[in-house]
Amino acid sequence: MGKPVKDAMAALGIPEAELTPRVREVIAGLTSEVGHLRARLESLETVADQDSLLPILNRRAFVREIARLMAFGERYDLTSSLVYFDLDDLKTINDTDGHAAGDAALRHVAGLLAGNVRKSDVVGRLGGDEFGVILPKADSLAADKKARVLVKLLAGQPLLWAGKLRTLNVSFGIHTFAKGDDAEKAIAAADKAMYAAKRAK
Figure 1 (cartoon, rainbow, N blue to C red):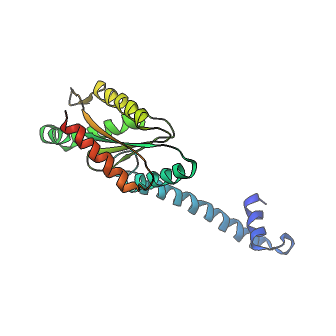
Figure 2: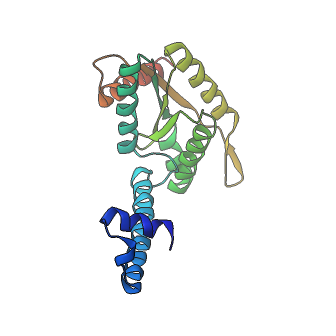
Figure 3: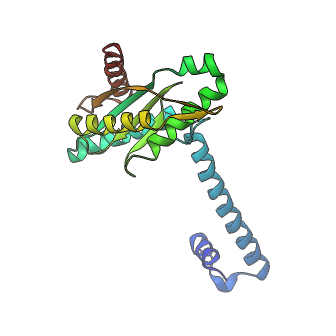
């Protein structure tokens, strides 16, 4: 008899000696079904957290991760930051080359961001052409340095579409989490900083 079945019997308080072969068979089937349901639930949670187009977190899951990190930071007095990126010319790409090209540009940006951050960092899509990167244990200077590295990386790796290379430019803003912040307030502050940087270009 497998360990999951024995564990199930122990949890139910049923002595092994009292079980008939048929009851053992039923418990084994139920235990297997519970395992399948648990795996399915984990799969559904992953789908629910992922953006509908891109292999990164959607806004809901990203907001949850900000809130989690804020609580962790306040408890252990750790400084962390949020970088808000905006793809500058998505409308032009859509208008010139079509929405398939725009979707390819978004996937390109998401892939480069996700592939060039630490395992502890979190990348998500905040809106149509807006992305966020949570940088745990990063103050504003460290966040600014990392953001500039990512901007340079994006500019240096153009999107190949229909046989042509298109350079993708982004603007960014930074907000370092402070006491009294909540997730939406932090996103709004980083968004405001991003628009200020965009206007200053």
